[in-house]
Structures are given as structure tokens and as C-alpha cells.
Image 1 (tube, rainbow, N blue to C red):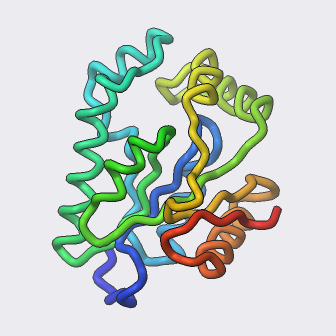
Image 2 (tube, one colour):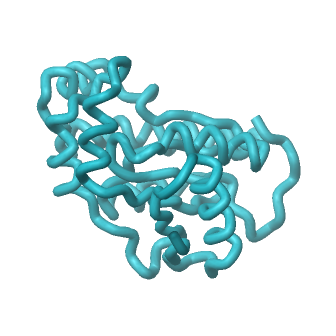
Length: 186
């Protein structure tokens, strides 16, 4: 966990968001390494009932997601209250979900990883160690609400190797005005 003091305007948390297969975990781990933050994958915070439902090929609904989002919020807030910072990989597909997460102690900025639907389906189908089946990518894309202009975050096209995506994300975060959505060049 990072105990490095952060500038007053820097949030305690970066939430790397997007649909399954977009690279949240990979990019999130690299961002955490670069920023000295603690990396957490929100998938690890899902209750067993949610994991079982997704393994069975059923999409989660808002009732399923509510306790999970509360756990993600509580985890980020507890770390910030202890003086730490996080990079949280979390789908955060809807504005209402991001509104929950944005209430975390210490402040939150979002990094939306934007990937072509065909690439996503291929990536998810190739994973053998994850509970999310490729059949649910379409439901996630249908659920996804892009960052609003008033949301604190950036949209980063996923192109090139993960290091290049992290570079683009950090550049976009630096260039964007806190409290508004921006777009990385890609």
C-alpha cells in the first residue's frame, strides 16, 4: 500500500474500468507499479453467489451488483483512511455504479479502457482461468454507459502493448481537468 503523500488535488484511487477482457487487471497492475499504489481487482471482492451466476452464463443485475459495489467502496475508503492509495480494476459499467465508487474517501478518478467488441470476445474466449464466459461480453457492452462529461476520468483506447496503454492513461490523466471526462489520443 502506498504511504507516499499525494498532492492535495490527486485522488487516492484510480478505478480502471471497462467490460470484461479490456485489460483492466493488466493495465491496473502496471498503473499501480508506476504510481506506487496498491492494486486490487474488484473481481476478487464479488460474493460467491455472483461468481456462480456468471460461471453459469447469467449476467448480473443491479441487485447482484449492489453488495459488491458497497464492498469495493468500503475497501477503497478503508485504504485511504489508513493513508494509502489504490488502483482498482472494476467494470464500473453504469454511471450509477461509478457514482457509488466516486464516494470513496480520498477521491476517485476513472480510466475507461476502450476496446473493439470483436477483440474483447476473442480475449475473453481465450481465458481459461476466469469465471466470466465470452457469452456475457455482449451483455456487458449493452450495459456500458460511457463516462459523462462531468465524471472525473479519461477514456483510453487500448492499442499497442499494455505499457503504451499505461503511458496514454497517465498522459491523459495529467492533461485532463479533474472533475471532467477526457480522451487519450490513440
